Amino acid sequence: QSALTQPASVSGSPGQSITISCTGTSSDVGNSNFVSWFQQHPGTAPKLIIYEVTNRPSGVSHRFSASKSGNTASLTITGLQAGDEADYYCSSYTSGSTTFGGGTKLTVL
Amino acid sequence: EVQLVESGGGLVQPGGSLRLSCAASGFIFSSYWMNWVRQAPGKGLEWVATIKQDGSGKYYVDSVKGRFTISRDNAKKSLYLQMNSLRTEDTAVYYCVRDFLGFDYWGQGTQVTVSS
Image 1: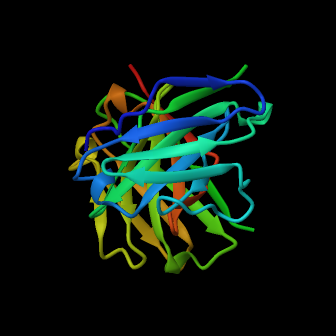
Image 2: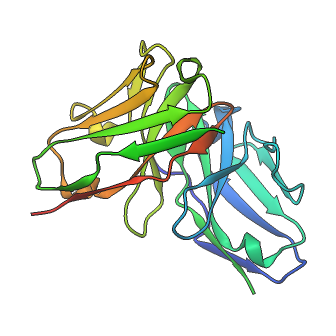
């Protein structure tokens, strides 16, 4: 149950694209179809933005997309906007246990 | 509208106990797995426990096994977390979370502070 590895911070200018990685092992990310991503603004509860590796819940912008290769999942945000500035977390579910990444702070310059 | 409202948090001394509750509305509570997720001050998210729809399956993070118990009352549309032998490292905001194709709905959280 070790935390998944995410970069502590990423940044980009409005309109640019950024990618956040989430690295686990063959026991979690590499062997799970249940990888999710969450966005959390300060003082608020997290919001699900990606589920089952690549799927967006209804109402989530098409600017958010995700993928997985081997033991690493990735979240890409295109057309960065000021409102995207937040903390982002990945998670992986395997056999009754869920593991989160350490979180990545996205700064929009 | 899906709503999850936590209650029961507060200040407790190390070794003490608390029982968190989560009142659910706006969906068929008995049809969903439910979870508790916590977030220590200034830290990331940590999954704590999961319970299946009928309570037949319960799962815990290693650090709370033997101390915390997740339960539910489907008739009352409520989720619970009994926390015993609390430690300072259990200090966090505790979120009640619905599980459907991912953790799709979160409550606003309840603060638990373990301190002497």
